[in-house]
Length: 83
Image (cartoon, rainbow, N blue to C red; front, side, top):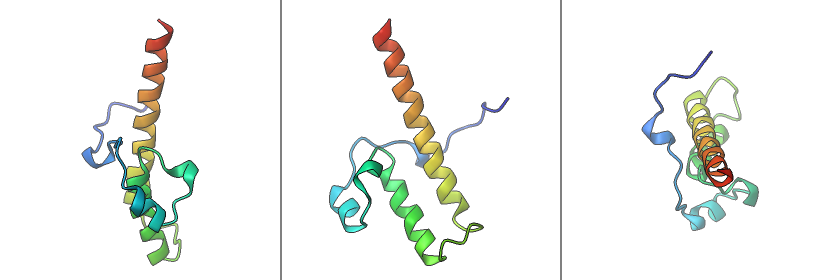
């Protein structure tokens, strides 16, 4: 059942984001999380390819993997608090 794969080093969430870049790229506030640096790259690719669903697959996968890793960290922190 899934799992067991190696995570990409570029998909690691970052605590510190370039807020000026996020503002310049018009990233909405709810999306300015630990993976926003990858969302900027994904949105650039989407704009260049006119939102073609067959392109930008690597960027989308990397962004979604980053979001999943961040979610796993939040779950682990929540479990540690409840012990």
